[in-house]
Amino acid sequence: MKHSATIIAALTWLVSSLLAGYIFSRLPPADFLTAIASLQLTDWAVWIGLNLIVLVLLATRWRILTHALGLGISMLQILGVRQAGALISFVTPGPQFGGEPLQVVWLWRRYRIPGPTALLAVGLDRFFELFVNFSVLLIAVLLLLSSAATPDLDWITLSVILFGILLSMVGATSMLAVRPTRLRRFIRRQVEHWQQHPRLQKLGDHGTEISHQLSRLAANHRRALGFAILASCMAWAGMIVEFWFLLGLAQVPIDVTDFILLFTVMRLAFLLPLPGGIGSVEAGLFWSFQTLGLPLSMAASVVVLMRVRDLSLLLSGALVLPAVNSKSIDQ
Image (cartoon, rainbow, N blue to C red; front, side, top):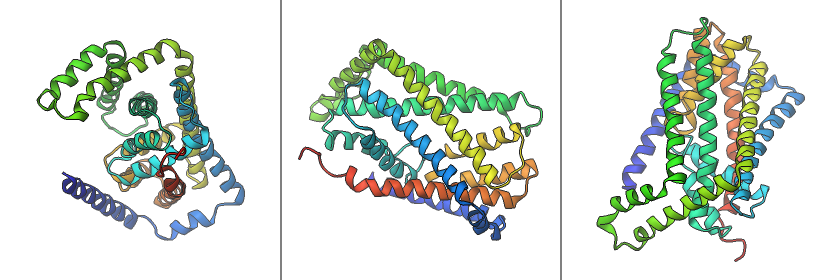
């Protein structure tokens, strides 16, 4: 099983590298360094500030959720766990997932949070992240669908898929919170042939504990959940502003419709199961710039600036990873 996972990871990295290499070979190489050298000190300051605001807002959302669950984790601790988890997610196939199991382990081992509570804390944060993510994409796709200036793509099918994902997420969460008995019976049916395993014997109990905590959270902390949604929406607004600013740094002349297309394609490409969206994001931007008739030199600048930002975030995760991965702070 472990050998198969290693092969899959290696293949996805190979596909990503080949795709990224092909796209970079089609872009003007002289513009790579020019994109960085042309930035002024004020450009760096504003750009870094926007990214820090987004990171703080995302950490604030998780801080709100953990506080509602009764967990005494500070903002700095949450930032550390988030960045370390983001590093793992970036280098594994599928940039949206990968670091979450380790985040659960870190909360349990370092901060002595019970396993079911740690799992719920991480799960809630990812739920809010993905729900707002797909909601923003659905709104963007509907705007593109109503615009006659966008490329002839099947935006209707894409909007139906995004809407279906949102409904599935809401339905699954509602089932967990409102009808935990059905979920518990389902889990027990799946593991009934291995009931003697000590870990599987506790699986149903953990599911019950998670559903009870989720029910209490929905009943007693609705304001906190509302603030968490607000923080997530503000973070996504920050991402949109940061991408607009990045396009301005690359001197890309676009209108609102063009910006929505570029942002939507970039975010959809990032959802593909490739490590860090390497290759898929570059291909999506390459196609978008060609479709809009924009110079590929500007596409090269955007790609380089985005990857410089990603590298900076990865370095921050690498710096905090040893501390987060250490044992309990009480030991």
